[in-house]
Image (spheres, rainbow, N blue to C red):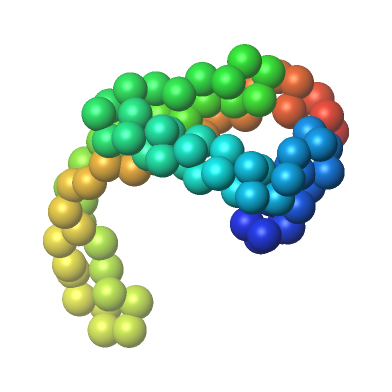
Length: 90
């Protein structure tokens, strides 16, 4: 499902116009992104939670040449599904 299909689904499920559904989805994305940038965890009970964690620097290998390369540390976004979402997917 892409963003346009998600907007259509939100609009039909919530009886909103497509424009209102797009604004709501964009607001969710903007707010979640801002919170994660600040290191805040975003938890939606039953659905799941978004968080940021540090991935440490490590040594990797170039698969073409086999040469060692240094991979720098970075922050990554993690999503952990909630119990209701996990049960619905089973």
